[in-house]
Image (tube, rainbow, N blue to C red; front, side):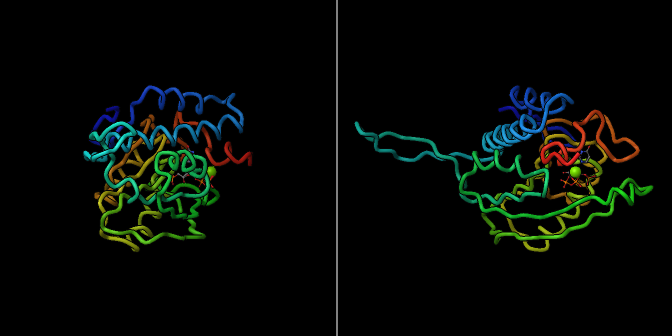
Length: 225
Ligand SMILES: O=P(O)(O)OC[C@H]1O[C@H](OP(=O)(O)OP(=O)(O)O)[C@H](O)[C@@H]1O
Ligand SMILES: O=c1cc[nH]c(=O)[nH]1
Ligand SMILES: [Mg+2]
């Protein structure tokens, strides 16, 4: 298993996840490679969630030659993936390769960067659109956003998710790069969420960007810079 449990988060330490994230960090990685990298990272993270957090069960299997015992992942169809627009879109495309039959929700959330970060280190968040599937007690909910900076976006998103559902099997917040400040904010605000990330970076800069980070993930994936 390549998930390391720490006090602040569960770290996805798969070598290919680290390799892919390092390519994403590189300023020379242009739009297409950046987008493909996020898809790849989403797929790896999906496999790691399955390996690290889901159970398997033994099942009888009839091969063309004889009956045997196989192993299946329990609850693979009881997964809800929530895409935090917009940077999560390619990341979720990769996750769906691990969970092809997941129910999907979408929440469009953006930081008001012109308003700037408050003295408490938060951003005002605008939520324009929310469409969530029914969340059932057996469901594993994965809220995906490659960047967890101040945590303001994720806290606002989780408020909506928890308004819709208070009974589920597990709630995972999955990101590629997290700032320590954001992990603290989200875990204090929603202690029932398990935070999964590929990297915990050093800190935020004065504009609320993660250092060293990878820049603005949405802008790099959608070429809006
Ligand atoms: O933890 P926070 O400080 O809230 O920052 C993280 C958010 O910032 C980015 O979104 P952004 O607002 O840039 O929107 P975009 O995905 O449309 O670019 C990122 O995708 C997160 O949603
Ligand atoms: O560093 C950051 C912070 C927020 N959003 C990003 O895309 N990058
Ligand atoms: Mg952005």
